[in-house]
Amino acid sequence: MAVAEEELLWQIKDLTKVISLSTEVVKDAWKERYDFHPSGEFVFLPEPCPWKVALAGFEVEEDKVGLTKFVVLQDQRKLWRI
Image (cartoon, rainbow, N blue to C red; front, top):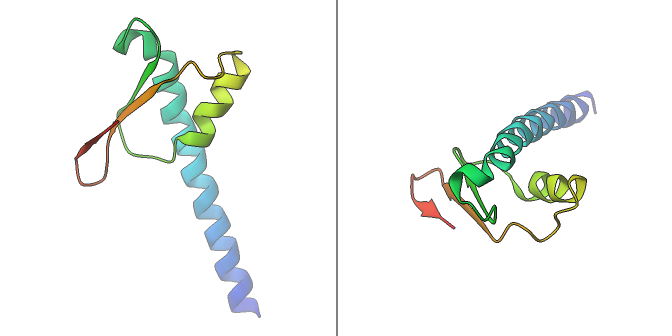
């Protein structure tokens, strides 16, 4: 039982680390969206990360739900995705 508990705690720690780092990446991209495109409808992420929840949160905070139409990023294989 202790092994399962330890594994669960490691998984939770890793997940929270990934989420907090990705939130920072998305926050910076959200602030710079008008630099990427004047409409603000494009968000450029400089590195791959789980972005959907964080981006939705920033849209809600600033009352701009649905503003983002496209997210531009490179995946882990360095292929561009929109």
